[in-house]
Length: 250
Ligand SMILES: NC(=O)c1ccc[n+]([C@@H]2O[C@H](COP(=O)([O-])OP(=O)(O)OC[C@H]3O[C@@H](n4cnc5c(N)ncnc54)[C@H](OP(=O)(O)O)[C@@H]3O)[C@@H](O)[C@H]2O)c1
Image (cartoon, rainbow, N blue to C red):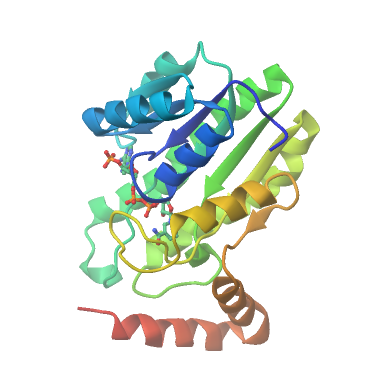
């Protein structure tokens, strides 16, 4: 990590991939601003990392669904030199039929994974530009590389993050900001008890930062994305994903 500024902000820091980012960035010596909805969990995490690593920490309780999320985050972080931003918290993935989803559920997923993420990236990239350098990791998903029937709008929102992130990887270099899009496959988390451990997922991201626009952790995930994007026709790729996803329906 070339950008050892003082502070890193991790959204969704209390579980899964975000929790592991907080742990590895603390081990690398960053002071941490940690964001999630549950304030007591956040405070416990802050105390634990501060005492284990001797770093400064700040709890930022915030629901990214709230309309004033950005002013809450800005008020809590404006005085901190945030040199590293992990844009991790997003809409919960679901598995079901598009036509069984309510309009409110679909709009909430899209809002959280596109507009909210975009506003946060813009806010912290502006600050990093003023500071002269920085690093941003956007947590997308392998679902952004391969269209997933029965997870349609989630998959589409992750494709948005991937495209945005790859474009910003190039554009933000002009301001000495490293931008990486992380595309995990299934990873053990609060909701999943199978898949990769979060540790190698986060290690892969930190190793790839500044070297490439995106990273898919794990050779099985890499192979799956490669096969579906480059070795199959689009029709065959969508059909094979759809047939698999159908078997997982309740
Ligand atoms: N796990 C996977 O298999 C997998 C695969 C591909 C991509 N991803 C992506 O990786 C990211 C993290 O997923 P995860 O599975 O590691 O998460 P997770 O274990 O479910 O943890 C979610 C974290 O985000 C916080 N959070 C959830 N909703 C929030 C909101 N509205 N506002 C603020 N904080 C919120 C949660 O704390 P509170 O509940 O206290 O808010 C928690 O800290 C997501 O973007 C996800 O799409 C995950």
